Image (cartoon, rainbow, N blue to C red; front, side):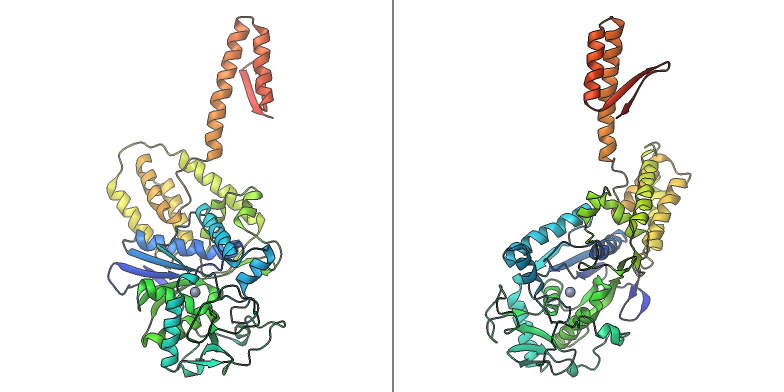
Length: 465
Ligand SMILES: [Zn+2]
């Protein structure tokens, strides 16, 4: 496997610390609202990456947090607490909001065939771990208390901008007109590890700590949850590209200061989903969710295919026109696969050869579009039907597009067809027996179900009204 590493800005051979085993961490959702399809693009690509690692023979342990406390409106720690904002909006408690949107997130993931990580940990489960790490950072002189909050001191680091490329625009992320500068900070990029005092006195969730009753900052949770389950050395950390700064930069700062050595070897970042006007977000334009796509008649897996058609390191532009094209492609692809008869003996050597080809091609920096190309190559090949179907089944372990699953709509159609044909047969019998009343009753019965029948010279034809 080869992967682009945001730390080195190169595509590198992926070599896990422990042979054959991968520790993988994913930044999870802040559960204050539905996930928009831009967020879900990251989760789809990370899902493919995890499955690809497994597909290539590695054992993966993947951990994800659920942010149910501490994430303020801006990714730097200013503005209103997101969870509190959600609770106020819906007149619910923060925990009710967290539960509701956590369930909604996993329901969206299920629809998109995104596997649930091995460990999913809500931040509110790990308060003692956060306190432990913050105490360590204070002891080592990497943190300070000011204005009754605990801050990380970025000036203590040799290198803070580990991902580089932070231009002034990016550094201004989160700085908006309606948020005031935190005057407790010694340096512009210092960030809060523990709040005991924020602008929002009604913060719902608070815990005892050595520094007073309060709550953790956002960044500390990923470092702690990752170390809790995956130890002090991590192979792979994933997230959306907008997490690179400040979130991942801060995660590295505090983790490595705490443990005193390098923490994570590979950083995988998925680029933005844009709409035609620019980056898609919750606050702008139509709020695109999986449910909205469904309401508009798109199967969620059409969106998954849409994402797989492009490379995760390129911005992707969403429009309903392109989604329509993808829906047509998906339908065609599935019917083409459905037409492959399960005939002949499976050619095991070919199965292995095509498996290895997939590892080679798609494993070159998660090239999902190449995976789709290979799928068409299989369909075009001279292999027998049974072998084709087995290879497609194999590829679908990574692509997860339900390629061999019969469409529900078609299944219903089969059932409907059987029913209509039985009635037509019955009507023909009735006519033969000159029981015209019975024949008309059958016609009416079908009509009441929206089925129109017509006697033609070629026999009876039927259609849905
Ligand atoms: Zn994170």
